[in-house]
Amino acid sequence: MTAHFGRRLRKGAATTAVAAAAVAALSASQAPAVTGGHRTLATGQATPDGTTDHSATGDSPYYTDLPPLSSPLPSPSTSQSPSIGTPVSVGEAEAGIPATILDAYKKAETELASSKPGCNLPWQLLAAIGKVESGQARGGQVDANGTTTSKILGPALDGNGFALIKDTDHGLYDGNSTYDQAVGPMQFIPSTWAWAGRDGNGDGAKDPNNIYDAALAAGHYLCRNDWNLSTDAGMRSAILSYNNSTDYLNTVLSWLEYYRKGTHSVPDGTGSLPSGRSDDNTPSTPTTPPSSSTPSTPSTPSTPGTPATPSKPGTPSTPSTPGTPTPTPTPTDTVAKLADAGTAKLTAVAGEQFGKKISTKAVTSAGKTVAKVRIRFTIVGTTDATFTGGEKVATVNTNASGVAVAPALQAGETTGDFTVRATVVGRTIAGLDYAASVTPRVADTLVRTSTTALTCTAGGEFADQVEVKATENGAVADKVAATATLIKAADDATENDKGPYFKDADGKTVRTLTGLATDADGLLKLPKLYADDTTGTFLLRITTTGGATLTVELTVTAADTSPASPSPSPSPSASASTSASPSA
Image (tube, rainbow, N blue to C red):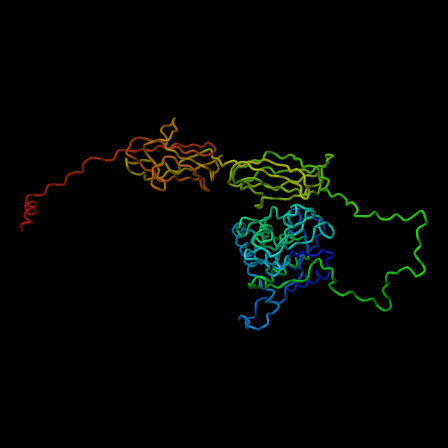
């Protein structure tokens, strides 16, 4: 059985007032400015994170229950666990988070602390969002792997009381091939899950119905724009990007601060279930009855015996056209193709930022550009390149000129070609591919860091190790690939089969080293060199990507084979004494 959220009909003013009051009551323990300066974001306004895509949830409905005003931590006098039969307080019950759900939040926090330490994501924020999105996956109704026992779906985003988001997943996640619906414990819409989805439990799949996958995806979503969630501004921007509503912001902040005061684990399936929802059509406060002096006027039926005057015969009133009227096309509906808007060649050295950005324009069949169209840029191929912020996907609205400019690309350490694909969100038309290339780091100069001659006797080992420094245009050349080979001659780069050599991990002779790289200071220190029994002058050649080459001389001299000086002959008396000793 699939759980569905109802259709949003209105958002009661009382909800806003209660949320604001609750936040104010908690303000003594909250971060600064949690209660002040709220702003209501109008429908169609750009999301606060600077992206112009829909929020993670498509601004779907959410639970509006607020936490108790009392701390979830027991008072010092009642710090012991309650005895059997002792009632559990409302605060203690609300502070309980189902064990698997809690584990998923904490694992996501740990992963983000490693992959995006500057974000400072607290697991309590994931818990707060999980509370308002799915009631902690309906009180922990998940299996042993963290997958919900039945699907949790938001309403169809058909534009009737919600955003209009046409189907993007062919019903794969939400079962709806006409419109998208929010899915799973963290209520991702399919179009967002397509790029934000993560495998949080290591099973090789990205399932929005799995709390480990969904919690990790939510963490990366909240951290995607380099926001620092330890700051008030960063926290607000991240939450509003998840659901573009001030009421939502207030509710999440309330639960965040409540969970920060203390939580505890409860068995799966025993968590408390919220009841109030942002799409609830039940009035939050009773309607004031009309006064006796001014009775309300009921709808007046036609007076019996006095039927409504019909239209004149032959001229009936024109009835409304049956069926749903044709909706006005959105800007997205008018796009016929995507075209390049002057993007230059996309190339960068490994580890550096691309100097040019991708520019794409949305065009109608008549050749006119279209503003306010969401363009999604996706990095495709075997590469560790990302957009600024560390993500593989970025969504940007076309500007007044119909052009969308993607965030800057950041090259990783993987060299080679990859593709950035531009597509129109919410419309199935051919995408536009951009070729990009990451070239290796290079050096144009190599020098030894020491002038000491490198000498060794035959069969021995060199006392000094070879160390070189690489530069490019006078600047340190770090992480530059290098190769070291003991060659036959200055004009013959063939590997020598005699003379000095390196040793591998097994102690075997090696005369070519590959896979070397300079460090952060541009330095490269080679392993120790050894000499066989061949004497003479030998050459070690070091080369790097970019063409820098250095040839180093190694000298092997003959071992000293002169006989040792004889010991002085003992005196006759000493000899006699020595020879006489045995017979003594």
